[in-house]
Length: 102
Image (cartoon, rainbow, N blue to C red):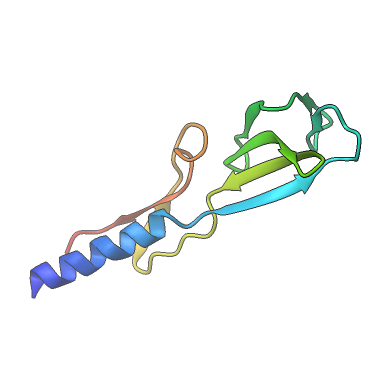
């Protein structure tokens, strides 16, 4: 029975770990670079990070134009566990559940 419970906990943690989101922010038609929300210009192919929101962003071709594609941690929920913020750039900064051993 303990092995079954342990296996279920591992499966739950695996599914918690892969929760994430992605979004696409198309740029103005005719743009030669991507402009982020702070007004900083990024050339096609550049990758940068928003440490505050724990996101990875990249300036990519999108249809006939450019877009900023962002990826972030998403929502994490682990009943009975405490969420601890990671350190570093995405995905290392995503919160991880820390559960008490019984």
